[in-house]
Amino acid sequence: MSTVLVVDDENDIRSSLRGVLSDEGLRVLEAQGGRDALEIVRREQPELVLLDVWMPDIDGIELLRLLQSEAVRPQVVMISGHGNVETAVQATKLGAFDFIEKPFSIDALLQVVNRALSYGGGDASAGAEGAAAGEAATRSATRQLRAERTLGKAVIGSGHGLHTGVRSGLILNPMPAGSGIVFTNLTSGASVPAHLDYVESTGYATTLHRGDMSVGTVEHLLATFHAYGVTNAMVKVQSEVPVMDGSARVFCSLIEDAGIEDQGGGIEELSVSERISIGSDDPSEEGISIEPADSLEISYTLKYPEPVGTQKYVFRYAGPESFRDEVAPARTFGFVKDVKALASMGLASGGRLDNLILIDEEKIVNTELRFPEELARHKILDVLGDLYLLGRPVRGKIDARMTGHSDNIALLKAIAQANR
Image (tube, rainbow, N blue to C red; front, side, top):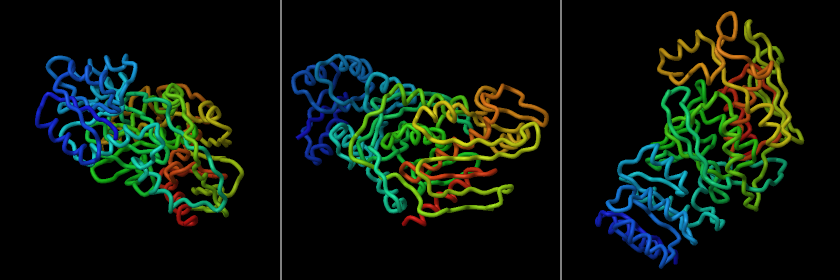
């Protein structure tokens, strides 16, 4: 029987949580302040502490800091009625497993509690819906297993959303084997699996939606998970993944800082048994296709009027380093006339001179290209991220010409249909 300590100065909150958690077969201890809680932790060694942020003697953040120096450290889930991104980020930096905001639903609470108690024990039930969503849709004709992997620890980033313009935090959390990649709201606990079934829109970025949770611009982060072989992770974010500098370099740094933990078992790599194409097969026209191959290769051809012209790049995946060096640094780009149009639609509010390549009718106006074919490489970054919405690593030879997110998703649907 696992032991949970509830630390809150409100009697009604403690009583309600005791009832809910006891019904789940957990042993529940209570403390109304930080000093009492510290004594109970040392004496009873609970596996999990549900810790309120605002308390009169020692506040939750300070108690969390003290708990990190204990010989036996419990998992800690912070609870607050006045939560914000800054508090969530601070708590995660100090070692909190998760952060939820009052009022919360019983289901949301129990999901967090189960994840916290099962993490490290190989229990895949907490996040299995993300993996289950992809099971039927991605059975491959040729099967090859890869080890499941998660992050070694939680890591934090921050930036502006490209389309919302809102500055927000980003927390990447480890997850048990079988969980898949799941996006969760920083404060409400609503979540959506990173899977094709939940794609809501593809206008200028890929957006996922389920119930009360929508999250946009997921493709750059998903590309990085794909390249580093991370199969299980929780991404805590608000309504849009921060665009950072317009590339995936920061996400590579975050994952390398977190480290990667092999979880054993295996996840089937997806491959195709025959060529599948969307759009035209004419090399001079728009289209995207995938055909069988022994590894992952993505070729992208981009054609725009000058000053861009024609760019082509072929990326052959040879491990995370190849992605980090060849594709991750490639930034998103936009044309001055299009940015003005997007602004009139309430989009691209976070577009700044330091997070995208801005092009007018004559030249690139705000930066120097990192690669001669940086724009084509960025399109490969988008393809690689959208591919991961199939719920597993992909193997095949992909050829894309003048395509975007809607074409990528159309190809994913065709792949899923062919492999049912």
